[in-house]
Length: 342
Ligand code: FNR
Image (cartoon, rainbow, N blue to C red; front, top):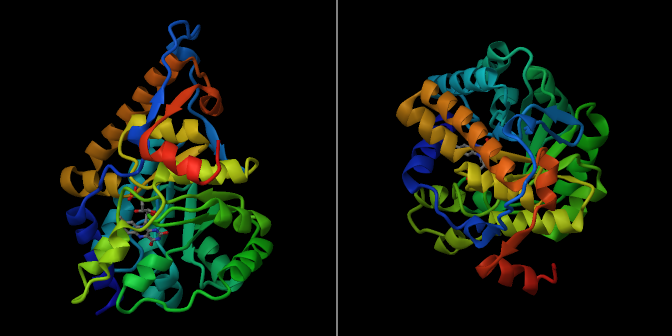
């Protein structure tokens, strides 16, 4: 199977396997405040991930690595939406374009459509420092994401089987690049133990990529004769993962992602300790089913809804959300107790 066929299968299966509501956000409730003492026009959506300044905490997370006309068009449309809504965007894995120059245009179009916006490159943890630098140069990236996807690789029939030395390679990439390095999961979440290891090599941010949204075990299992079905339920729910990462590494920027679909999910992720939120599957679905104008409209509506809810909570800045009182119930409460997190 060619790489571009596999990537197109990913897109199709991402849409058909759907997103669950298992990311844990339903366990989080805001404590209503009747005297917020702010007005709507005081609310600022600006935020930052590590050294990167963002005009809004929302960004389009990595999708559509690999070549082919379909992925080129998706990247072009996503880049146009990112430009018009002034939000950051991460591209999908650039490894294919490092191996085959024909595929570079799938990524270069993103920078062409959005010359001044924040664009984040993407590679796997098998990358060398030279490949990391080439990926950044390809799109003049403002930061580089390194994805960790052990369970996806194991479920993929043709996937990697050795994960030895990943932290060491990330360390070398962090040392050699002059842009921030973010490390992300792809839907299985990050534990506090992983956060400690990543922090020790100086990454700028952790994108938890938690369980409850796009499910790459299910997607890869669709392509297997004998499924590894035990991986379908594998992973740390996004809400738990944000809290784990933030509690263990308070100084590190945390990105909330994995199953985020609504402005309320975003607000909850930001209140749990994230300083930005990444959406992949939900945005892709809107783009492919309803078009780029619908996606642009959805992002504008979401920003407006965030402002309404921040007003109700009396939080004028995104960072204030980490101080608003919340109630944590259900499985998320149980998880945190078991993990010794208060
Ligand atoms: C992805 N994702 C992804 N991540 C990554 O780091 N590199 C990649 O190339 C891709 N490719 C990719 C393709 C498609 C079609 C989808 C839907 C997703 C993973 C993505 O960035 C994110 O971590 C997960 O999808 C979980 O977030 P959502 O989809 O639940 O918002």
